[in-house]
Length: 186
Image (cartoon, rainbow, N blue to C red; front, side, top):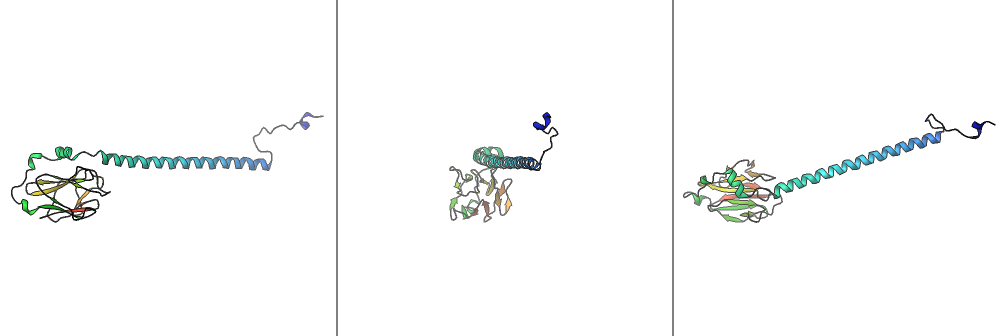
């Protein structure tokens, strides 16, 4: 009696013995590939989610910790050049909100700058979602008023022109801050 006929020796070549075993090996490899693709998709989605959360937090941080109006005044303006005008002040007596949630609001202009934003200590407190905590400032210089953006996220526009430096505001010219529009009137 031959020993090899009683005991089946395993196939040492690494090739499947039967068609069923070949199918089983192929299905197992397909399942591994599907699992790998699924894990890579999950990881990519998780990475995109964290990038989105990080960008939202970064925007919120820059808006919340924006410099105060006083700090920006010390940096950008020569405070000695801002003096109340003794003449021509009657031409621009008030600031009028013409569009937005505060439409119809009037602020009498004096010698102090007007701070505009969502902060509680602003002269004109906006409830607009598109405005920043410290969004813009209107400052008197001589007999004219100038608008300057204080590093806002969405920008300040003077008659459809984005404000990058302090710009003179002519009477009746719209200044857009988010959904709010203001004008100087007499």
